[in-house]
Image (cartoon, rainbow, N blue to C red; front, side, top):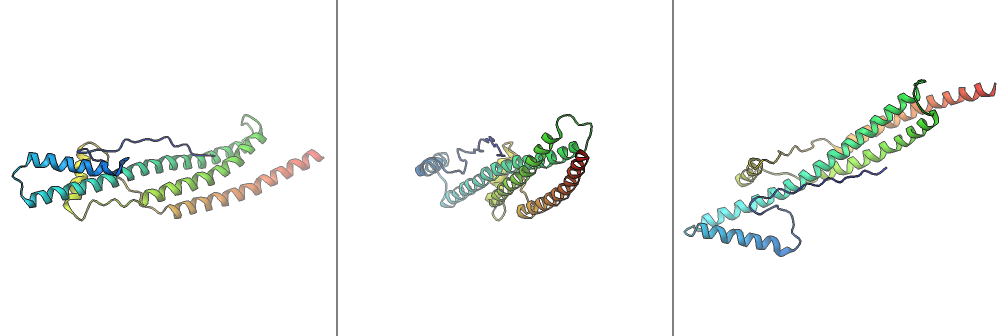
Length: 206
């Protein structure tokens, strides 16, 4: 099973800045020069301190936008992977119920085959989710420490973009617990299925 992810998110852009690398190194530097040139034109009598303040504000805005755009995308990808993981777990439960339902439509063997495949899908989707959750946690979203970063984040929110809700758990721990529970349940059910098939074989042999 492969997890299809076609999620695309347009990066947030404020004042012509996304914080993300351009196609060419000169792009960001040129944009920076253009911004400061426009600022100087609008503030011809600005002092050295005012120039420094604007530079620091722009640096903070660039940094927060870079973290915001990178993390927001990774969190959406993590959410997609989490949904696929939970759907795979639910499918195992649904197929197990069908295996024990004498009124269930379709072939018991076909349902069992689907159940076995679903067991593998859980391991795959949990692993995929773990990778994506760890990738999201690798981005440290800093908005405190300086007033400029806080100001930049407020500017993002004021433009109507969503607040970042960082995943605070441990992907490795959560994945390990899910797989351990999944493995224990699969082993127990496997023994029950073996007993059922053994009784069925004895009944046919009589």
